[in-house]
Image (tube, rainbow, N blue to C red; front, top):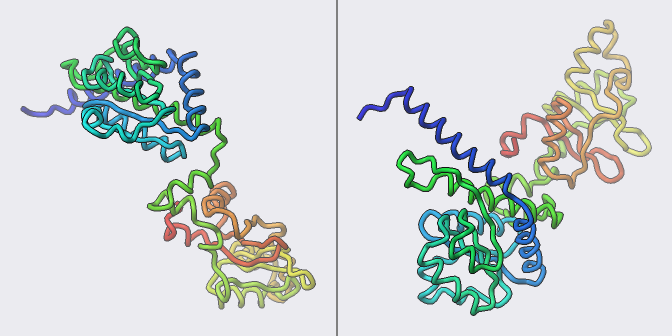
Length: 329
């Protein structure tokens, strides 16, 4: 069989259109049952209970991902294999838990066998399905329904649009609850201490700023020549300028400021650096997050950022060229 580009692209686009239609239909179908389920999750979490997710086949993969998403946002969740649960894994379950049973048809034998067992443990059941008339939906306490006009598989067999819609609905529920709980970036970072995500979320300005001899600082009364020499010695593209008495930052002289000063006349080097410095430059506190520094670089199109302490004194410098090596860009 030869893959023809035109036919392949047409099939791929048709698949995406079908899956998009399932997402659109699911979004339009949201209503009171979704809110009721969200409130049930809030209540279980507040009471110290957990969410249980289970499914069979492709639904099991979706259930695992949704459980992982809730865990990453601080809502205690677990996945149990529907078959293994009936052979000893039910030790994870406890009274007051909320169990999400995923089945597109709502008629999966393993899921239907698991349903009454979970009820005996005192868990409430959420039917996570596209079939409101199914045995699963009719025998559950709550329903979380997604809509699938058709599968994207040309044979109408492989789960495609149904798994996409189920996954997206799980994400929607998790994001609604994340927002309602007021989860902050710092809260989120606690659950992601490792990997690139953890590094991005936990890295502080103090961890990436230049200090000591790599931080050129001078009084704002020195000559432009002395300021340039200090910049050169520190191999820096800027210098922090401070007030004599307070040591507070009053300005910054950058390479750009230096080039512009050279256009003012032959004696520019003898002029006070305050003549050419940028006053009230953009700054950031040393206890801020590294990603906050990145936002300042992007928003103001700057190359250097002075780091100050609570007293407004320069304690560090972030050079835009340093950001890639810390992997926060």
